[in-house]
Image 1 (spheres, rainbow, N blue to C red):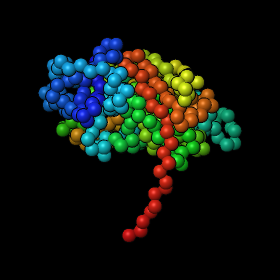
Image 2 (cartoon, helix red, strand yellow):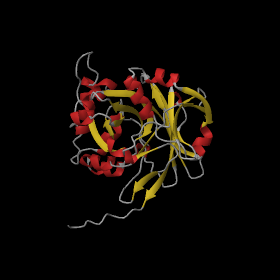
Image 3 (cartoon, rainbow, N blue to C red):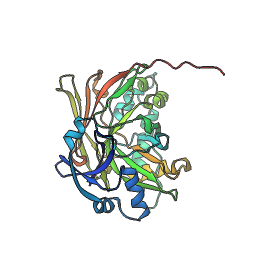
Image 4 (cartoon, rainbow, N blue to C red):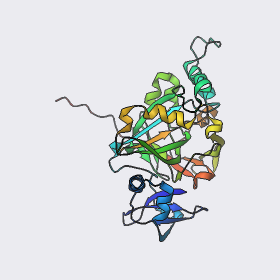
Length: 332
C-alpha cells in the first residue's frame, strides 16, 4: 500500500491510497492526515494497512493534477513542526565509505592508516547485523532539523546563501510516530532526498553536523509495511531544459547495507528524548550514491529526481538559492 497526503485548491487536506499504476488516489474518509489515521490505527490496535483499507471512500482524484497544482504534501507530518525530528545515519551502505574516505584523507597522506570514516564503516561490516536478540554496533548518527525543513515532492530545495554546495542524497527514510505509551511505531518507508553540503563536509569531517543542517524532501508516497531487502532506483540531475545530464543507479535495502534496519532503529530510539509521546520521526538510512562523487555541481534551477518503482511516482525537487541575510544578533 502507498499512502499519499495532499491538499486541494480549497486548502482542505486529505490522505489517500495510490493505485497500482500511480495515476489515481482513492481518498480515505474521515482523516485529514496520515498522522491522524495512524494514531487511530494505534488506538484500535490495527495495522495501518487494514485500518486505511477499511476507511477507503468513493472519492478518487488524479495524482498528476494534484502534483501539477502543488498540492502534494510530505507523506507524514505533524501540525506542530517542532514535534517532528529529522535525523539520519551514515556509512550504512556497502560502498558508501569510498566517497567519504576520499573526502577525509589524512593530510599526511599515510595510506596505511584508516580514516575515522573507514573505521566506522568497518565497524558496521563487522557488527551492524547482529544475531536475533542481540544489539549491534552503533552507526554514525546526525541531526538534520525539525519538521520545518521537510519539503514535499515538486517543492524547491533551497540552498542557504552561505552554503558551498547543494547536493542530493538519494535515500530511504523510515517514518515513525511515538505512541502514548512512549513506544515507537513504524508506519513504513519513503524515498527521500537528504540534501547536504558536501563541499563543506569535505573540508573536515567534523563539519558533518554543519553540512546536514539543510532542508530535505520526502515522498511523495509512504510504503506501508516492511522495506524490501533489495531496493533499486535511479538518481538523476536534470538540467534547466529537463534533459538528464547525470544519472546513476542506487541500491538500498538490507541486502545492500552493512546494518539492519532494526539495528539503526534501536540506536536512534534508545534515547528517551526520541520516545516522547505524540512525536513524529523521519529517519534517513544513508546512501552510497552521490553526484558530487562524480564531480557534478548542481546549479540553482536544475532538478533532482529520485525514482524507485516500488515507491510509486518519482521524487522531484528543483534546487533554488535562499538569499536570506545573516541574522542580526540583538543584545537585551
